[in-house]
Image (cartoon, rainbow over all chains, first blue to last red; front, side, top):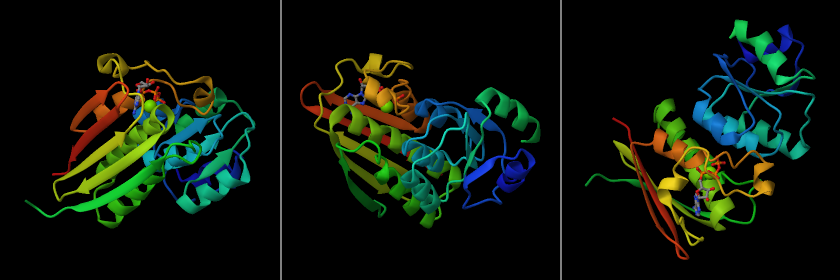
Amino acid sequence: MTVNELTEKYGLSPVIVPEGEREIRGGYCGDLLSWVMGRAQQDNVWITIMSNMNIVAVASLSDVSAVVLAEGVSLEQSVIDTAAAKGVNILASEKGAFELAALIAPDV
Amino acid sequence: MTDSLTFHFDVDGENFVSAGQASVQVKKNLRELGFPPEIIRRVSIAMYEGEINMVIHAGGGTADVDVFEDRIVIVLSDHGPGIPDIDLAMQEGYSTATDNVRSLGFGAGMGLPNMKRYTDEMRIDSTVGKGTVITMCILCS
Ligand SMILES: Nc1ncnc2c1ncn2[C@@H]1O[C@H](COP(=O)(O)OP(=O)(O)OP(=O)(O)O)[C@@H](O)[C@H]1O
Ligand SMILES: [Mg+2]
């Protein structure tokens, strides 16, 4: 499933989606950045409640397909601008991480 | 000796919100050089963990990356407090990070273990009160 298809299917908010046709394979949930870098796989969708600038670098270097912000977390404009420049897809939802993971898992 | 490409970075110790710029630049360079994505990913993450450590634990430092055809060598050097017990620091979960740093999502004590896991060789030379030099090598063949 692509990032655009995921966004559409579950009514996620596209915060910034520079590469919407990217394919998603599997996922990882977590907020501690070194756990994410150690455990998330390339092309995963990464579900988190962290919102600071470092999530852009972590998403980019770990090469995940998209970040999904849970619990209605919002981003500062500077974070959005950096994600746009680095080609990092970010989606958002009011749902919690557990619920989001359960929803998305069968599709990816 | 094969020719190598060399990249040098000064890592600013003041700003840990924008930390990681050297690693992001190296990722870009390796991609342009045509390295396989999995190699780039391992290099980027190992270097980012080391770069972040220099910023949050050592007040910044320098990063030197040597790119050979068959391997990539990363040397991270700082004049921070040093690591008193390297075996302890290498354990998963061990961290001296402050609450401030933890609130940004760091401080899980997983950085050094990740660096070890994603590289083929890693050496830590550290002297308390003087600083730390970490050398990592990733084989590409
Ligand atoms: N360059 C360094 N200078 C001084 N101490 C360091 C340095 N790098 C690591 N350390 C020490 O080793 C500990 C473990 O490092 P490690 O990267 O594994 O975890 P962390 O940085 O605390 O958390 P995480 O990397 O999971 O965000 C650190 O908490 C710190 O005490
Ligand atoms: Mg660390």
